[in-house]
Image 1 (tube, helix red, strand yellow):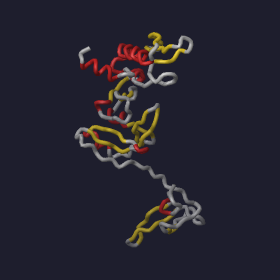
Image 2 (cartoon, rainbow, N blue to C red):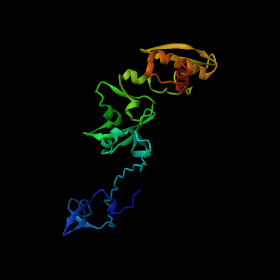
Image 3 (cartoon, rainbow, N blue to C red):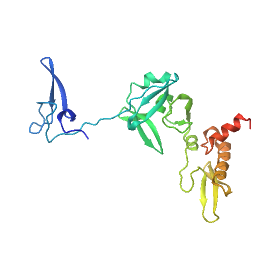
Image 4 (cartoon, helix red, strand yellow):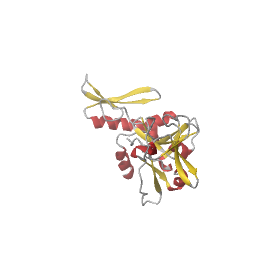
Length: 229
């Protein structure tokens, strides 16, 4: 909360007068609609606080390939050094949607996401973050795709299980693994172990969705690739 003084009021304006800066108010009580000279520490009942938007002060990384861009809500976007100089001229803010933070800016009375701006995506396409981090806007982490492909890379809506494609069946007291492909739900089996059910989902997700699959255990896939499996 800001102290109720003219210097913190949205109605305060600066004006040049006889070689010095003076302060005027356009909504001073008893002078509404007329300019009135005021002092910084004056106050009236028409006070309305300015909206201050705080962005963190960031220290740029030693990695010469990436840069940080400060956002609102204490968040930071990661971008390629090649895009940094152009992106930093705008005031970006953080917005939270569908369980993730994204970077946006105002544009022609609407808003534009940083990831769409970087990729210059056509209107009928979306931009997917490969690692699921909506603030990692390096080009290597972004890909243009169809909406249905982007959906495959979304994390699950956790209700009875912390894994995507898994739920608890009270009747049989087992974990159920299933996957939706082309609008049809496919049953993958019952499991005693929750993680085993999640791995069954991962196997089918890789089969049906390829690189767009959201995996419960992506590290296991990376290890298998390294071993040539």
